[in-house]
Image (cartoon, rainbow, N blue to C red; front, side, top):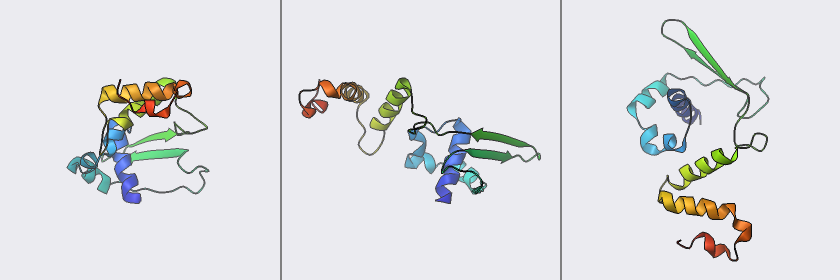
Length: 130
């Protein structure tokens, strides 16, 4: 679990984000990511109340300097839901990535159908080609 956290930390620091493509096996196996992850130490602060947030990341640099970043909330949770554009972007990324990715056009159609699921006469319409 801590190895996974170290890898995600490195990836997030490198890109200032953590899109789904950054957790693909080939991305996680990147030698640069693995080398940086070996130098990451994860510490849990029992004083922080949340499971994932709040969280603080401290980078200690070779020159002795430090860089600190904090996150007070985790986007995409019930307490901090994604907005419509973020939700669509995340759904599209998830549907077009993975072991059996959908073509982008098919994923877009699927998302549009899910958005109007209450108007579909039959749920099989979700899967029928346009």
